[in-house]
Amino acid sequence: MRVLSYMFRLMQWAVATYDTAFGYVSAHGAPLLDLLDPQPDERVIDLGCGTGVMTIEIAARGAEVLGLDGSLEMVNAARSEHPHLSFAVGDAHTFTTSERYDAVFSNSALHWMARDPSAVISRVHAALRPGGRFVAEMGGAGNCAELIAAVQTAWRVFGLPEPELPWYFPTPAEYATRLEEAGFVVRLMEYFDRPTRLADGPDGAADWVRLFAPELIAEVPPEIAGPLLDRVNELAAPALRRESGWMADYVRLRFAAVRKPGGDELVQPPAPHAPPTPNVPPAPHAPPPPHVPPAPHAPPPPHVPPAPHAPPPPHVPPAPDSPQVHHHAPHVPSDLQA
Ligand code: BEZ
Image 1 (cartoon, rainbow, N blue to C red):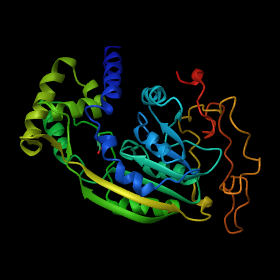
Image 2: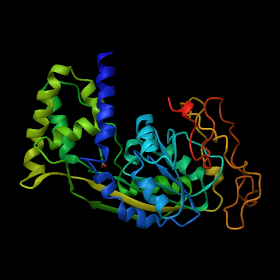
Image 3: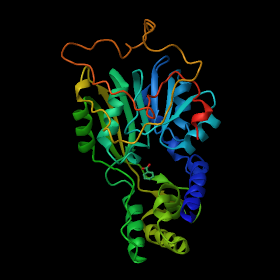
Image 4: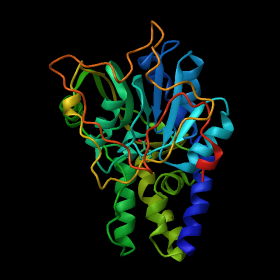
């Protein structure tokens, strides 16, 4: 109970802090947005949208955008910040859509979807129309190596078990292979260092752990959390603390991939035992279902028969508690938010 309430307070703090002291999540998103180059009338999913800082930027370029995030707290914050945009809570490993999108965008989020990265890619593939784009940036191999080494050493010094880190930082080759195996053509794959300024103040590394790894702290006895984080700071300082402030050793993977025509046969439906996708039905005033003929410039709806060599994907009816994400709902009904 104590741990739960601690986690809850940390989560509230994390939501409040995510785009203020640590506003670099959005501040560094501009080049990625340019790479996405969303067009008016395109339909885009912002996967792992957090508080919606990039969702609003995509919308500002005229695209219709749905922000999707696994955290109810983040989605609630996004909804109250941007009430005119659409947001839904959903697990990137299992989400399904009732129509196909022109692009899936993701900034600084895919490394959190660590349980099964190929499942995430497969869900993205299924959500895109043939030719649709998957444009994203995430932590790459070696990301935060100094920060992580400081955490691991501090845990060891305090006699704690090796912390289980919640992130996935792939090499470019590994992630490109996953993309290709899922039916994407990789058009761009960049891998670069991006030293990133942390919040002002002496507690840069400790605050980083509090914000980004609260589950690690929740597992340690509360009375040692403070000294443990002090030790993280001491250990990380020589590499990361400059006169001008703390710099995190971020390494980025930035890519653009295109869904090949066909390829539906490569898409793995979610495993039967996968956790349910949250219930996100269309709002009562949502537009008609996909059998209505699309506007001339609209991408083909999912029921258009595929090319002969590309059999349609196996229809996996959503479980009663795991229906599809629908894009046209401007607001997800409030009774689904809790
Ligand atoms: C990142 O954006 O690279 C990141 C942020 C928090 C934890 C781990 C990685």
